[in-house]
Image 1 (cartoon, rainbow, N blue to C red):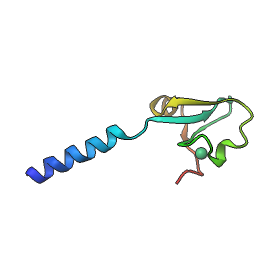
Image 2 (tube, helix red, strand yellow):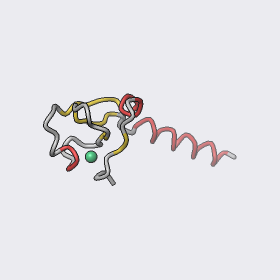
Image 3 (tube, rainbow, N blue to C red):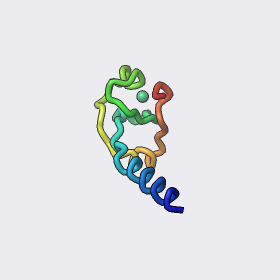
Length: 69
Ligand SMILES: [Zn+2]
């Protein structure tokens, strides 16, 4: 039981430390968000690349770009 609690604390800490900022192309047609600003998926973005909170990106209906992984 003690081990389980420690594991839970461990995973909670990982989640908290994870970066929640993602990059999106500020284009009206952009449907993806990116973990890095130099992602291949952003290279053809002719609009501004903006940093947003991942929760906001998801709320806007954006999904993780296919190049990430
Ligand atoms: Zn990407």
